[in-house]
Amino acid sequence: MKTFLHASDIGPLEQALAEAREIKADRYKFETLGRHKTCLLIFFNNSLRTRLSTQKAARNLGLDVIVLDVNQGAWKLETERGVVMDGDKSEHLLEAIPVMASYCDLIGVRTFAGLIDRKADYAENILTQFICHSGKPVFSMESATAHPLQAFADLITIEEHKTKVRPKVVLTWAPHPRALPQAVPNSFAEWMRAADVDFVITHPEGYELDPLFVGNARTEYDQMKAFEGADFVYAKNWSCPGVTNPADYGKILSRDMDWCVTSRQMAVTDDARFMHCLPVRRNMIVSDEVIESPRSLVIPEAANREISATIVLKRMLEAL
Ligand code: CP
Image 1 (cartoon, rainbow, N blue to C red):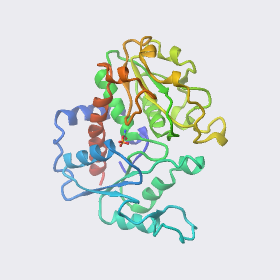
Image 2: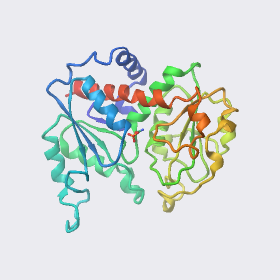
Image 3: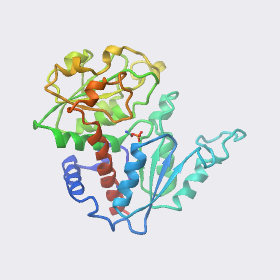
Image 4: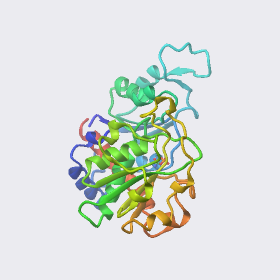
């Protein structure tokens, strides 16, 4: 595997899930695979789970790890070509990438959407430069449009906790005080479409996700109706994807607190498990009682980030 951005990069999901069971049974089974190899993790944006779980995964495989926080201790990087660099950015990504690549064998990149220019965000401008100019396998640690390590961990979590062959999984929008990217819901939708689940998306009108990720997934604008009989509820905020109105891209269209997931909505589910990628704003996205209930999976879901990252790094090492 040379790049990891989409569900299709991992190949058949059944095989990936079998690998997850294998790694979970013995996460050090491949501890010599990364010997004398180095994984570079580059963060343009903040992280807790991705930063820790990916380092842990790399060490499970015997890899050395270098972590770089761009803009904190490194030179500020210019990412656009053609810019007269007379501002505060001292180095261009086009020099920085091959230099960084010369010190490592694998590269993970976290680079969020700017939420101003839809075309640039959906072209994955920064991640694409790493893929084109590093000469190394590159994986997304949440890029402008996708968070595949999270979606893979979410799938593993659903697989571990499902009690039906084909569970009903509901992705629900929920309110947030700041405009957030669409990466998590995009990837979750993409991976759920590839999995054997009954998948429904619910959100206020105007929040339609990009067809590249949602395909023909069922959308239900009535949140209570969407929740009926659900086995898994996955809550997430996202800003306007600009699908129906490009001028609204990155904007907050609704602050309706009725969409916050509480026991009111959970009551119409089939005793659903609650999921969220974290970090989560309590009593905006989800009530205290729902996230603290025994039906909440937010901690096992975060723990599975180590497993999804171990599999992705393992696949990349095997393809070197
Ligand atoms: N879910 C997730 O990616 O968490 P972090 O932003 O803390 O890495």
